[in-house]
Length: 283
Image (cartoon, rainbow, N blue to C red):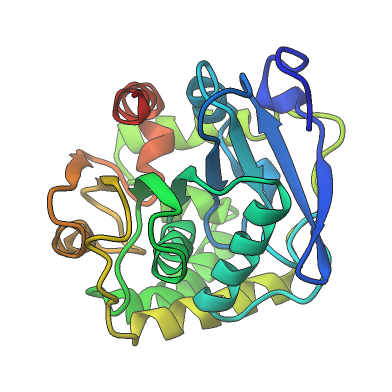
């Protein structure tokens, strides 16, 4: 592992790999290596470069942050998983390989679904859990998410837009400004970038998402210590009603819904989100 203080920003964090479950998993870590680590699970079709550096840098001010690539994605080897449960099995193996028996976790979108499957498989592994733009198994509208992803991607291609502009942000003036700023931040890392995400990754993860949308929610009320749920009020990919459904899965959870924001609400409201998440994660 890297030593405390050697890296000041996520755009400079080296990509490392570690063997787990018959594969090598790519990851980056940042921040002081004290207390419980905060494991970050990213969204559909994303590699390590898909994380907003402002969000990572903000969280890493006082936390040991570990961002990971799923199996077969980016710098991780092996075949891409097509089920949320298998993705969770890999995350558990990775956490064990890194030597941690208790963690906090931040799951974004499909990463939030993987985080729930991790909690189901290893109750009490996760102390504090942040779920952003996620939904429970069988959540409202999740069965339509693959179709929305594909049709929006096609529309983005026809209009020469980055698909993330249409999927993650609203079409209002504020949403368009936030999209431009976010896409610019994703380009700040100029060396040591992760391997591009393949079409096969999207296909497999869309299958995993489709299956998750048809499953029955697990009983997770006692599997996690505390939960913070974040959503955008105009999320087309994971409808906002999923935030309320997650609150039923995790009674007592704190819920924040950001206005005029889509699937990328945590990137649009990065300052507000980082402040709230740090307060939630702080002991």
